[in-house]
Length: 316
Image (cartoon, rainbow, N blue to C red; front, side, top):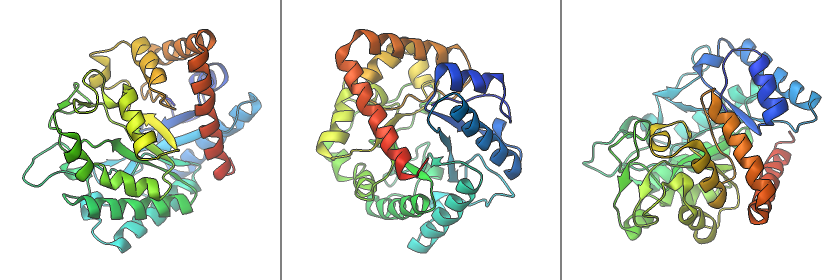
């Protein structure tokens, strides 16, 4: 899944869809001008995919409300997760956001944020979370997920296994969190368990190294984190990396290493949000590994099956 430049179908998008064969695209403020323009853009993307013999694409956006909301007025603007305090608040956000995204052809929302910030800890996530209580965060998140998905938009819970305790911004560099696994299980994982019970379509992995789970790799590239999600929590949906262009990855791993490792970890979707050579390099590395490693090919086939099953849920 990749980002792109421009506000209409252009040569860059045609290359991504027809040659790189992306499974999805993600929209940012640079791609958005008005509801009518977004609707036209999304329709032209899907029409071009069909003309290339490609399946319909996942078209995603970050519409958390508050500080992270790519779609501005006349789309409905919400104050953000800290202000979603009741089930009614969560349902209203999920219903309105789901209808508006679906109405313009966006079928995936990279939300809700299910990170939990412990009390008396000042972290970078304070303005993006439901609060300090994991039960409350899980309840609000599950309601948002249900209402987004009832309105035709796949929800993606993030950032597993939780970045509420981190103080270093992973957009800039790679945080390391030394927190016992039992503490994570008693707090940070609880909202994700509720999301899984609510059949959330996707879960995004964070770019944080959790030493209690994997001393070497950040969660987004870690087979141990994926195993925790799949085997211990029983999750069967899509697993997506956070943006591989972020400093936490780009400053420590070249794109070939990152792609190779996420494939070994059995992550389903590599997210690259900025146009540039990393997208083509990632595609070539994926293609080479699929051709040379039977085990990775089989894992890739399973990932494609998960993506296809999700698209069929939405009748894409």
